Image (cartoon, rainbow, N blue to C red; front, side):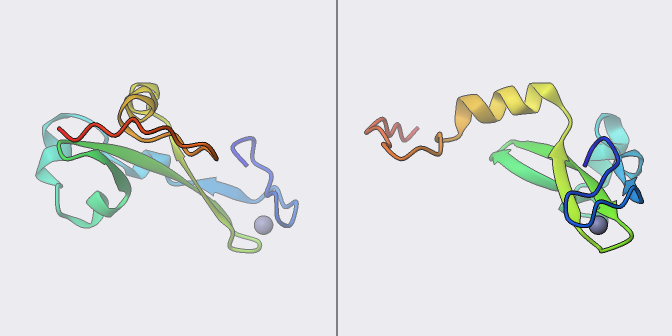
Length: 93
Ligand SMILES: [Zn+2]
């Protein structure tokens, strides 16, 4: 969908709201708790990952991406891996 084609209906009418999101800097912290804050997911108690939305305006399908590579690495470190054989590696801090 990032390459502008909807996986559901095949339409090329896909729009990105990525530019709407203030990802870093003082304005980002000012907006904390505001309407833009909902456009992110919590990674940990102190860290949020901003989400880019891609919307097909033909059928209404929405996809979400985390565009920040460093946040993806953070998730890989901090979250449990979704796997069938979950290891007993629980470490409560
Ligand atoms: Zn579509």
